Length: 273
Image (tube, rainbow, N blue to C red; front, side, top):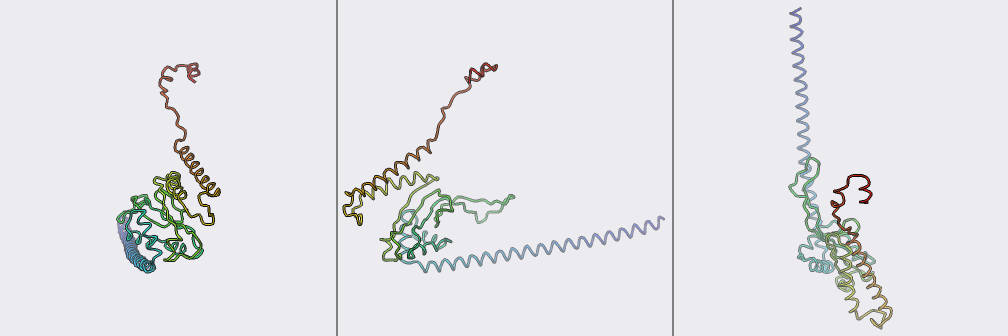
């Protein structure tokens, strides 16, 4: 029996060792295959990024070649208003994924407005590594970008271009057909920014306007006076609304300690109430 046990034990040990070797070999193969797959994935990912960067550079140069007097007019106005160099503005525009909105703005019967936001945007660090929760380190950085005005929160400066007619915008008529303006809504104070723009810029400009088109009497016309009165009234309403929102309701601070320090029974609570 002892001999058989030893033989069986030896056989079991041998089989166990063989099985362990097979499992170890299989696991090692799986690890090697997985490692190879990851390496290939990293290489492909790196190549893909290089290809995307190459395509983006080609697109930028194609757009740069399209820039003419119309674009130069927009770029100069933005550079003056936002205090950036024209080169910085140009690089921003040709890198923007909404670049085609500019062409749609220039086209006959095109977009009535073209908006740019200049504000803090979270920029991911180039060397940032993902945290355990999947998030990455990001820092706010000033950025100029084209927008439709309905998809991003407005927290900075808005620069806008408005068309005066439905005619095609050309290099020769862009300064007459396109109006430029800005208003500051830093920290999200949109009402304050709009109020300042209307009261300090638009209304003084309107009141100094000499040519009112078909209205020959100009500022002496009752229609013009009614219009200016309506604008003044709107600005007044805007200011009142802004103040109401900002002031809200401020409750007076009360030192309740003097009221509660001697409360001992229900009748004391009723008296205090």
